[in-house]
Structure formats: C-alpha cells, structure tokens
Image (cartoon, rainbow over all chains, first blue to last red; front, top):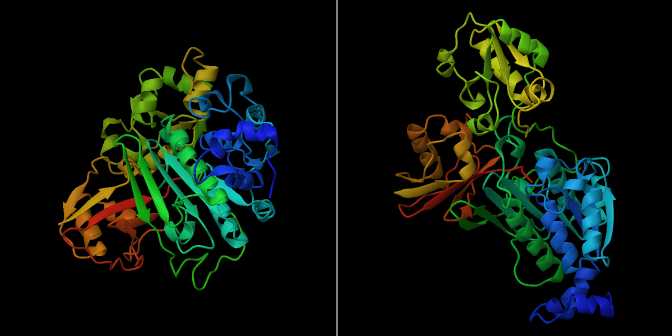
Length: 377
Length: 90
C-alpha cells in the first residue's frame, strides 16, 4: 500500500476527512494507474479531476492537436496551445495542477497493434474518445484484458455514462450496442455541434465512477447506463444486462482479439468519384451564372454562407426539396469542408441533375482563399 | 397504453419525434405502430427482418430488452419505453 507524504496529506486533507473515504481510499488512488483515451472534451475534465484527486499515474492517449474551436469546451487547453499536441498540452496542465501525479503520454491514436499492451498495463481504462472505431477497439481490449472500462459519450445536449466491469454481471459495451452504426446513421460533434458544458458534466460523472471503482467506495454505474439530457434537464438510470448472444462476452464469443472495426462516422464519402472544382473555379462558375447550393445545416448557414447560396441541408435533400432548383442551371454544391457536398453531388446526380459539381474544401477553403473577411468555424 | 420516449439525438433524423402513447402488447408491435405515425422510424430501429439494429437499444421500465431478435418483450398499458442509440462524441 502506497504511503502518503506529509505534502500529500495536506493536499488531500478534504478527502482524508471524508467519512467512508479517508486515508485508505486515498492510498488506493495513489497506487492506481489509469489509462485515459482522448484528451478532448471528456478527457480534459476527467484528467483535471483525477489529477487533482490524486490518482498515482495517468497515461494519456490522443493523436489530435489543439484547435481554437476546441477551447469552448476542452478546458485544460489554452489559446497559446493551439496547434500543439493535445496530450502535451493536457500533461502540462495536469502537472502544474498536481506534481505528485506521474503522467505519460502517447501522441498517437489507439490502434490494434498496441491496444492490448497499453490496456493490460493499467488498472482502469477511461473511454473519452470521439469516434466509434476507437470506442469498440477500447471496449474489446478492456473485456479481453479483464480491465474495468469507464464509458462516456456525448452529442449536442445529451450524454451517456456507464462502467463496464468484465468481472460483473452487467454485460459489456457490445451487449448494449453490438456494432457501430452504419455510415450516416450517427453524426459527429464536428458536424452537429456540442454544448460546451456538456463534456464537463459527463466527464466529471466519468471521473466519479473511476474514483469510486478504484477506491472501492460507494456504488458504481456497473450494470447501468446513465442518460443525461442537459436541456430538459433530466437523468435516467437504465438497467443493463449481459446478452448471451454477445460477440464479445456471450456464450459463444467470436471476438477473441482486439481489432478496430471499420466504421465511418457521419456522412460517408461516395464510392464513385463525383466532379469537383476548386474554390477559384467555383468563383468563375458563379460569374457565369452557376447557382451555389449550401448543403450544411441551417445553424451553420447562419454562421456564414456564400452570398446568394440556396440552403438545402443534406439530410432533407430529396426529389421534393430539389424542386426549387433548375435542371439546366449549373450547380456548385458546398458544405463546410467538402465531404458532405460530395455526397450531395452524388445524390443530385442520381436525381437527374447533370450540371452539378462539388466545391473542394467547402466554405472553409472559400473563406481562406476567396473571401478572407468571412467567419470560419 | 404504453408510453414511449426517445433519446434526444434521434430528432436529427426525425424532427417531429415527441414522447407518445402507443397501444401495443410487445416491443415489436410498438415499433410497428410507431412506423404508422413516423414513416421510416421502424427501418431506423430494426432491420428488414425485425431485428433490433446493432447501434440501437430499447428499455422497458428502465430495463434493457432481452430479445433483440424478435422484440418479443411484453408491454403492459403502464409500461414506459425508452429508445436509445449509440453516441460517439467525446
């Protein structure tokens, strides 16, 4: 059992005085090693509070860099860190907060090559990632390595939290959601936006689960899924159970190795190539009478749009909604960065439009190269 | 009549989705009845053989359904149903 120094006793004294927590729980926390996957919206509050609470060792994994639009919710990063690795930025912040915590970083995405190695080496894993591929890889690796997994996920105003304990009766992540959604059936926060305080709320619930499990204090969410809606506001605690047909933890499991599933979040890129033009070519087409079609959501359109563009959000793009377009007029389709517009272009072609092209790089490239006074996001 | 609610994020695909009452004695019957009100909702929740889609789950009185294949879990007029789907954001 780890011994607390006098400095640590002073630092954690409000824990030590806490009935049912005390010095034994604090020692357990100190001797724990936690793998935190994701240093973004969820990873920042989780990292801050676990470091402050006195977890002995934290391993941070993320391959992303800090961007200015992260700072609305990723509260451990600061403006000066923009452009630098998230794990480096988070480590610096946590080390300033609590020098007693040992912190190591991996500036890379978790992949099947080393997932088991890094998971096996820790006492508890926290999934704070932003994509299904890493979520399923993490869940599989944790179950196979018999490591507890604190799970949390968010979208716009809503969040989910649970703790999957391979030694418990509540089942695993795949008992809840056996496979990732098909392409296009689950959007990303990049596209849909997210309330800034939401990852804070969900992240701290996750940190709480981690601390309770490591310290053996109170009851955890093992066997339950907590749903939180920030707008209502409301919480539900839903009872989970092991699925005997589960591919991972069922009676006849087919998943025996941690391998990343092939998933595409949000809008899939069409298989067949669609005609694309540069923003300069799009500008020239506009001068010759082409119509611009904006396939982003109305909230994005309100932030910025090309003058005169027609708003036709991709989810509603069908035979009825395109009635407003003229088939003999050339169309330039754009979105934020050029992915959704390719899908929309393919759909318009399927609806019989022949003079339609996608604007490469989207309105972000347009703002960068054609209209520098335009807001970017 | 069973009372059914939905995870908020389903509104992205079905903007008119609101909590509602449905007369149904199984979860499968409930899904079929919902589709009468919101076309394409059933095909989002279940596949062409009526099996629950892999990224969706349904809870009856806050307990996960047992039968993902046939959705034979029984409902009573007092049942409260909640439909969720996987989220990836972090």
